[in-house]
Length: 116
Image (cartoon, rainbow, N blue to C red; front, side, top):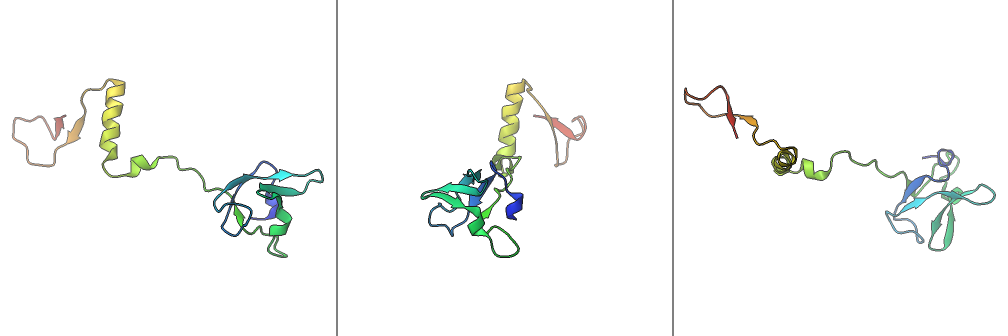
């Protein structure tokens, strides 16, 4: 990430290389009276122009936060989807749904679905 891509109000995450910031801490970029960008730290202000890796002007030690996941981890765990569907059915008032039957059916059953 380049310094020119950062503006006041942006949120950045610190890595483990700072003595004045906890590793993984999310900090908000601010600007002083002269417009120089910094992040608040234990010692006051940590100026971003001191975090450049040389002529490329890439920021070292700070990155953008990872995007938030849209689906919570609960939906991805095995076995949680039936529980969530049951809760959804109770909240919405649904009492039954159809599911496919994989085993052989007797002739008196209506089609490849059973009512649960």
